[in-house]
Image (tube, rainbow, N blue to C red; front, side, top):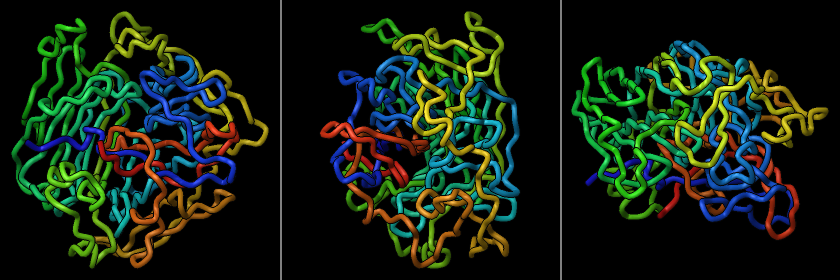
Length: 444
């Protein structure tokens, strides 16, 4: 049986600390809440401040529920990609969704008005996540998947308490897209169902998630392929409905499920070990998926919630929709020293998310004579004003050069990863600035 990308086979491959006194970061989970000194539990299961408190911050495992910053409310919008000005690196984004529509880790590119989600030779790929959240709504993505054994593309909705709604593409099977869902990160392999369609690499398809309070529909090109009813998800033991029900980001990703160091089950699910000498790698230097557009239509929030405001916030650790309120609280951290309980910390020395680079580099891209790249975390200058394209022969982040694996997170890239910021070493209590991407592969 094929397994889901979002089954937590992914995890953080993260940077070595700047400060030599720090040996490891503090991890968090159901039985291990973050300490007050590093209050925010990131989606990667690590405690810190700054961007750890933004998208993906899990209020269930943080020091306090309000350690996580409020998250930007759903906005009706249609996104296209004539340039990458609407994308912000996760090393710069501070929560201002008016300055960035999407937050990324890795190597997003633009080609002929389309977004390329790329995975350079020997890298761990790219994740692009919306800066605003959806609390029930309809999301359409027009895209082409990547191809090749071991290459995995995903379009998912993912919440801070790890509710999840997925489309997943295994590059070895271009006639199938897998659908799946999870509730609060509980892994259930039997929730997966397939939809058959024409070649997902060669052909444009519109993939739709219609997420209502009482059902979810997955549709391809306007044809419903699957419907899940909330009433059919009742867990008789807990008395809860195991149904995705909390505000979620839209995430697009490409990652190497067939990495040789992954678990055998992961590699088998991904269609085999990845071929770093594939035709696309040889010609372009990377595998790629192409996104033409993303359309978000917001539905009304549940009747018990405020019907207006600018942010979502959790009020308890239950993780159900009743835990969420709509507020007028600000969503922007003053700096990477701030958290949800002290949004203004470090404000005098912080840099605005509006200082992103507008420069770009032209490189070779499929069917394109003019392709630009957004600056990645590993190539961003210290001033925040530079950007760099991907080199065909020397990608700036490789799977073989990343540091030790961190704790698990849901891929599809729940991979999104906004986790530049500060972590705390349990050995020394020193602050450690993370300087590279935080995402990769985790072996259960």
